[in-house]
Image (cartoon, rainbow over all chains, first blue to last red; front, side):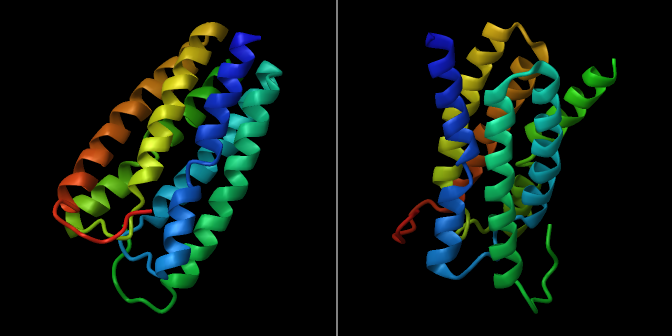
Length: 91
Length: 91
């Protein structure tokens, strides 16, 4: 029970970890210092974590990474929209 | 064996997920659009994931989150250094 609470707390913090970044981009309408590659790399990573969670039959791992993936797609969408037409090199 | 490779691939992608953001901040000397709260929230989250990994006795989860925590501390350090003295509101 304690471990389940701990797992849910861990999952809640990381699955919504990009929410402050999304809010900041949304409010400031600026994302030039933000790394889009970080969103892409995390997106691939959490997709594989979901599969690993299926292997472990651990619903906390599966669910947390599914929600992470959703927030990452939102973050990447906003990032691309804000940087549309920019000529600067993106890391 | 396949699952181990998948777990390691998942872990590698996410544990180094903030490296592109670190490189971008380092190269551009700018982090004003970056959310420091995202680093703090992830830092707390991966710390709890490490504990959850200890519970599951899963070394991939433990190791991946330990390395994540290290990269997050580097990211937060650079972020704070770059934004030192800034008066703008941070989300």
